[in-house]
Image (cartoon, rainbow over all chains, first blue to last red; front, side):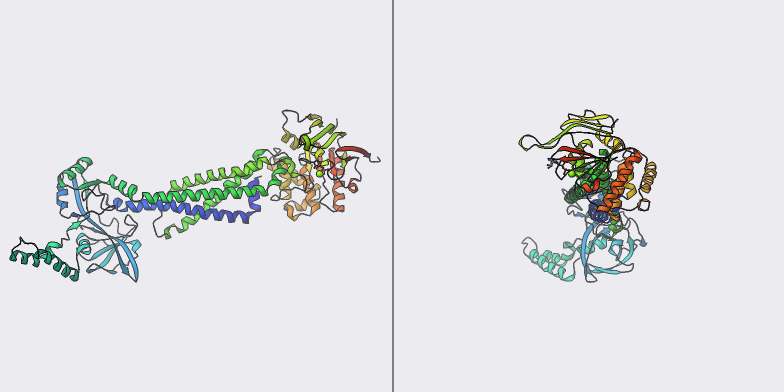
Length: 400
Length: 232
Ligand SMILES: Nc1ncnc2c1ncn2[C@@H]1O[C@H](COP(=O)(O)OP(=O)(O)O)[C@@H](O)[C@H]1O
Ligand SMILES: [Mg+2]
């Protein structure tokens, strides 16, 4: 006969209630683990989609995600010419926040060359971008319809395709347009801005004493073309031919082209170690605090339930029960509470994790590790109750 | 061979100035099948004596012999497994039934059998048989809270009898019952002593309850001051 289960069955209301409470707590702990994994997955989503070996960025920067990186687009020809580089493709990244249906609408815009790589990894509805201009592929999370038009910069863009779970390193859903469109959206100014620029720069040109009148006049007429170079990108990604030394290519780009060439591995370090390290520590700390709270709660529950059973324990001792019967009752109860609370938390998180605003990634290993931790906590927490129980004298069963 | 032999048992609680002699120089024997009462007012040392015999409360001096085995001789005899002796040789009945509230009537009896290494099916059939013999066949699956005081005490008696002990010790078993139920419990104990040939030692402060006992010891201030024998 299992005393722990009998006791729980008899007090099932109380037991279920405490397990639900603990379950909620454990659900939060699980979600935090999931958020952490989600941060990772988000941070690396673009990396995983592009499968580039090298990210060429502005010298002395950790761009293009952790820091700003601006490099001329035509670098791509020089990178392609580096021995060992199989393909190279320029990319531009920008985060946009516009008004859509009266609400702020935030997303990450990736510009890519239609005949290069770095475009949408999958198309789950519609098609890929075919026209050089004014077409867009949006992530599913943006909840845009195929055919929907959206105004960005100076033009309207039409959603022609939907891609899966693509996000920026900070979790904003990603959309794709052609590189030239992306550059337009980023750099093309509206007419007022152009006029302002022309006046400001024109005044500056007039103040240059070494220019002749005709020279100055010519410059002023062509200010827009000179000042407004839209042919800037944030990175050029490259894939290497098989058997190429990554290090040699990195060195070569650094020495001869004066750009920084970040390997995929280094980029992962930059994104995970640098960008999400604080968030990771924060989440870790919260998880520890919540687990400590769970431990305190379990200890208290087990301790008070032991106090409730002093007379039962004394009677059992008096009629000759072995200590293991009594220890078993308390320990099993504690473990059972942990198991049920864990199951509740797990169910809860399973039912809700897809509705969280940010990605939650539930990894089997994390969940298993948490289960072991919860069991250990239950075991340790039951010690206070067991200690109390072992001190009970059988004589306490006598009298009124 | 006596079921219980008590020889000059003394129990002193505490030390020095605060020492209390709860029982002093108690000497008597109980035969198998005998129903014996220890009668005395509150605080006279009855429970102390009972627990000293019951292997719960170490006697300061004197000898206690249960079923031929010396268990105490100026303190516990070394190397004894007191718990095992309690499960195998002794049955306890309490003032309050002390049934485990989260176990049904039958489970309360089964637990005493299971801790004595019976399998759960053996325990179940023995418990059922015992409870039926005590007219509790219709109460097997009731929790203690659903039982009347008399029924609960009868379940407790069944638990005490479960392992067929040589000695049954009862501490004020009728104190929580009305007179009629109390008398019923006492006559049940009487018949059990005869049926099972076990020695039953009952502690009580209520002289109305000791009718039909084989012998009655009067206790005052820790001393046995008299012995009444039943007429037969
Ligand atoms: N654990 C204890 N420590 C100290 N004194 C005790 C203890 N138990 C009982 N006593 C004292 O011993 C005496 C006898 O108590 P007890 O055996 O309980 O008497 P009864 O059962 O007849 O009422 C009382 O004076 C009581 O206060
Ligand atoms: Mg008493």
